[in-house]
Image 1 (cartoon, one colour):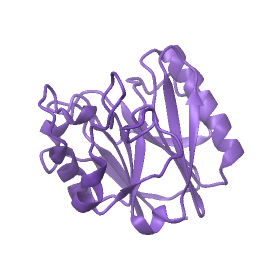
Image 2 (tube, helix red, strand yellow):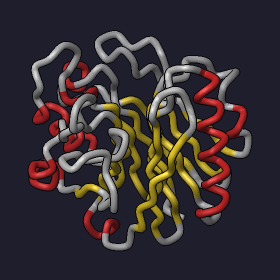
Image 3 (cartoon, one colour):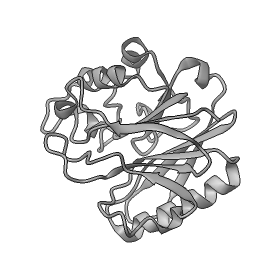
Image 4 (spheres, one colour):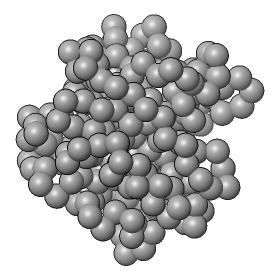
Length: 227
């Protein structure tokens, strides 16, 4: 079994600040994922320095960030604010690839290739036209670089279930429940899309360990049978 998760950190500022990454790390540690896709791990402006301190991650969660050949800035943790954390034994076998995405805003996805499984973390745009183009690009790239077992997860920024996701018709899409805004969630912005033959055992929205205060999103998770 693998426990997968996705979490938009909101630059580790909770709803309104102050910057307190230890809250987000406590949430991740309590969630105890094997692999977690993170969004908004870097500050937005200037040199885009890390909002989630790299030096604290393994000590507080037991996980390590994906090693990327290029980041947004010299002091960034991720690429376009995204990274993927995983167990160290998985990270030793990971091949990381950055996927540039079209759209009005600068966006990108991060693909992690593991033996028998490809995980793609994403944070899609605010405009539905951009999201459609981005999902089409991701689906096309996944078909080219991945094998049969594919999981895509992240902040889809899509509040509808009946539009905007057309490019993922070949995948099973799970929106475990409302995840935004964290104190009183109403919108299912965070999703996981999986190849149809991957067995999903359980899934949900995580509300423990002070998650309602640590970010404006709640993390989502799914347990799958390891391919």
